[in-house]
Image (cartoon, rainbow, N blue to C red; front, side):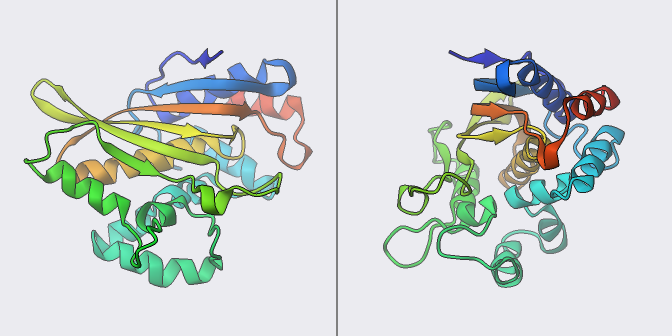
Length: 250
C-alpha cells in the first residue's frame, strides 16, 4: 500500500500537504507516503514566512531549527564560502571534530555522502564521483547516480532509537527542451514530519542545487518516499498546536 500526495510546486506546500494528510490518519502514522516537489528551490529559506514559522515552532519546543536540519544534508554555508572541492576538506576538519563524530554516526548525512567506507583505506567521496560522472561526456548511463546512506555494518543493531533515517538517494538526468535536468528520488526508512520533513526537503534541494551547478545541469523535481511517516509530537505538542501551525503556513 502507498499514499500519494498530489505534487506540490515548492518546499512549504509539499511539507504542509504531506503533514496534513498523515495527521488525518489513525495514530497520525502512514506507510509509503510519496511526496513530489516540482521545484525544491522555491520557498526554501527563512525569508519565507512559513519556513520562519516552522523554525520558530521547533525552537520553542527545544528542537533543531529548519536550517540546522537542512545543514545535516548539505552544508550550504560552507559551500558558499569555500566552493568545491575545498569545502569537503573544511567540513572534515572544522565540522566533524565539533559534533563529536563517532565511528557509527555523526548526525550528518553529508558525512556519509563524502566518506563512504570501502574497506580499502581511503573512504569514497560519493558526491565528487557523481559530479565528475555527470560532467563526463563519455558516461552514457544517465540513470546511475546513486547515493548510499544506510550502512548495514554500522546501522543494524538492537537499539530502537537513533541512527540514520534517510536510507538512499537516486539522481537521474533527463532531457527537457534540449537541456539536461537533474531529478532526485530519496527514500526514508522513518520520517518525523514536524521535526524533520521541511528541513529535509530544503536540505535535499540544496544538495540537488550543488550537484546541478557543479555538473552544469539544471535542477529538476524531487520525490520523497517515507516508508514510515509520523506527524510527531515534539515536547508533547498538542493536536491543536499542529492544526494552528498548518493553518499559519497555509
